[in-house]
Amino acid sequence: MRIRLLLASIAALLLGVVLLAWWRLPQWWPDGVVAYSPFLEPAIRAEARRQSNSPPVFTRHTPYVSLMERIGHDPAAGKRSLIRALTTDDAAVRRIAAEHLAYLHLRAPGDAAGLTVVADHINDGDAQVRAALIGILGEALCRQDLLLFALGDSSPRVRRQAVSGLDGWHSATLLPAFIAMLADPNDTVACAAMDALGSLADARAVPPLLTALEANRHGAVHSAGAALLKCPLRDEERSRTLALLVRALRSDGVRWSALSAKDLLIGSLGEEAIPFLRQALDDPDYQSRQFAASLLRNQGEPPSPRLITVSIEGLRDDAYPYGRDGVTYLCNAKEGTCWLWIHQPVGTAELRTALASDDAQQRFLAAWLLAMRGDTESTAPICAELVPHLRDGSKPAPAWAIRALFLLGPTARPHLEAALPTANARQAACIQLLVRDWVDPPASTAEAARRGTLRLSWRYHDPAWEPSLEAPGLLPEPFPDVSETR
Image 1 (cartoon, rainbow, N blue to C red):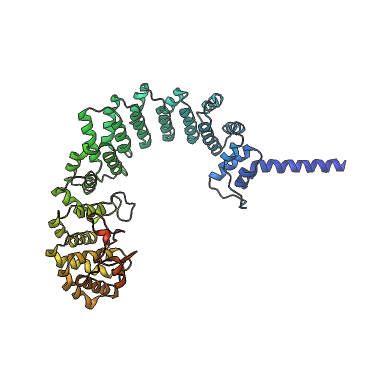
Image 2 (tube, one colour):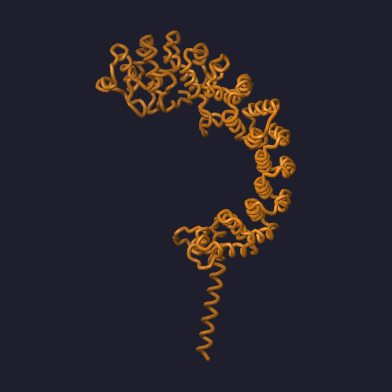
């Protein structure tokens, strides 16, 4: 009797341990459960715990195994487990189930029974679950009625997924629904509707798309602009589209709008946009002028007084529109320097004026361009700007300055010798090398190397022998960092 009682107690204890492990182990050791559990239901709960970023109780190292890897061994069983997980009370578990069901459907579409179950759970209380299930129905191009109903959902995520799903039908009957969604208060939903209208390429969509482009919501320039270019446009509609895209080049606080407009103008419209871009050179907005100048230069626009002025104005910035410390989207200083070097001697008068700029980079580049042109009339201000940069340490500026001073010629010698009493070792060596090369230049790279060169940046330099700078438009690399006043 006692033995039976002991065995029963042990069995009850083991059952309790198994039940505790079934419910608690996915929370305590999610990596291990996903990797080693023989059952998928605990693995699904463990994945939900893992994605919650809550620290596990057990931190023992376990090889990372994704839930999709586990499901991939038996997709049919995995799908059944995921569908059962849609009925749990835990919203995090239902999200994991819905997302993985969506991925399974993409890999093996056409499961009518599974789609019926998905449709039965479309009113889930969690927005992420609803969005994932709506995505499944949209990819399967089924239950258009549910997708249309989801356009009125309280969650922007669900509405956006419904618009994207309906987009797959490519049906003109959905045009009114897409036009109505342009008024959605959420920008991503409205942009999804613009993309859908672009897919239809229906002339009836042009007026509302033009209105959306003019409103310039976040993302509207890219979505509405691209959609309009897919639609059949009358001449006046195309002109208005161009004018609105050029207007979007301004600094209006709508992030990405100017860059999206720039990409559309240069990628899809080309020469059609040139008259509008020429007008934008006179825009009071600095960003608009610089974007327009960049686009015109890239289109091969010949020098004009206004383009020269704006290009020289842009020498003060090398990473617009997000500043020198941001990601470089528009290299207007580098582009302008290269363009002015190619088109010499245009802009000489404006460059001389820029020598008195309050911006260190603009002064340096103006002096460099004038010296490379051999502008001896400006020798004094050119030397006043370039000679101090021969002192710089590992910056590329000394390599730029020494070549430009050599091409400026011996008229710079008095200014160089005047700097010798206060020169540091690097500056003195540069001045001595310049004077020597003016008197007796080397005939080849090998001869220059034998006589001794200076390492001014990432390579050795002799100002009299720089074959990489013989062709106008080829700039030394890297670009000099002179953004801070010396």
